[in-house]
Length: 265
Image 1 (cartoon, rainbow, N blue to C red):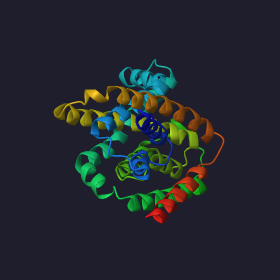
Image 2: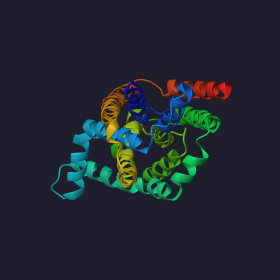
Image 3: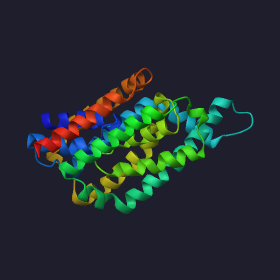
């Protein structure tokens, strides 16, 4: 139960902080000498973070759905913008969805080595620093266009590589496109939702075929609750933080963690 809760908190925090959840879920068991918790537990953790993000953004998803379905001349401008953002999310999900179907298993097999994860943590952390230093950070969600979506959507596809971070690479791309930090993060979280949902459903089908370990019901419940709560809080406080501060603290963390892993090898 303790391991399940720790891994749930790790998943919830690192799914949305730009420091790579996949890397941390590989590294934490490696550091503590724990065994692989298995695919079923991974599904539970991702369902927890999915629950957290839906709970936080449910009003946004409702407005986007309404705007997408009923985008008419008499609709107020805010709902028209929300509807457009909804379609942008659909379009931006395509590159990562195609890449996931084509390369997910191969990439996760090839890049699970801690040394390679350390290198990606450092390199993409430095890329995040570059985007912070060079981006003008003036544009909001209402200013986004199709080119923004294509670039950010293609960037999200790189998150298949452990150590890259889905939120990290999409925030990086958003900053390079001169989005405000909070706007880049908000869109990154909204864009991640369909991918988390699709990945969870595909993994659930695999678990369904092999059978669910009912004897692990309570640890799984603990991991689910921990990932839901920590994910919700990570989104809330990261958006507040980025409205006031630069992303550099996450860059420092990624670089130091990468160096620590390489030194420990």
